[in-house]
Image (cartoon, rainbow, N blue to C red):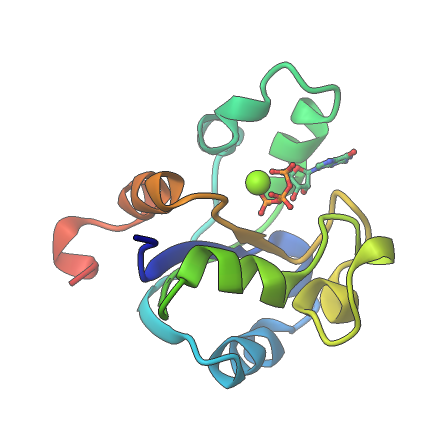
Length: 139
Ligand code: GTP
Ligand code: MG
């Protein structure tokens, strides 16, 4: 059975361009509840830890630099079938390929600066939620 929670981050480009409200409005309109939220700035080391699975990829250094370039908004979102439904709402990694009406279509600048993150499995949603939020913050 699929889980009912996923982890998202509003990435530095979207925060810097004042799209926090617009993105949260799309998330809520999409039927998700925000169950945890904060604003913080990742160090390059923490960004590297979060994206460790991509360590061998050519864009890893660029990704860590971008994700630590300014504040982000991590959030835990709740909805039935959260992981798959949220990935549908955000759209393809590359905004040029993202469908009309998706968050990345509207707010992403490029494949790297793509406005939001979304967990890719229930297991990673749980790990990523614990990465950002303590137990008392994710009730
Ligand atoms: P996330 O939700 O952020 O995990 O994105 P994703 O699951 O759609 O993509 P993936 O996990 O494959 O890649 C993680 C992140 O690495 C992407 O969101 C991009 O920010 C970045 N990324 C992926 N491919 C490229 C690339 O070719 N160039 C650059 N600069 N960044 C990339
Ligand atoms: Mg991913």
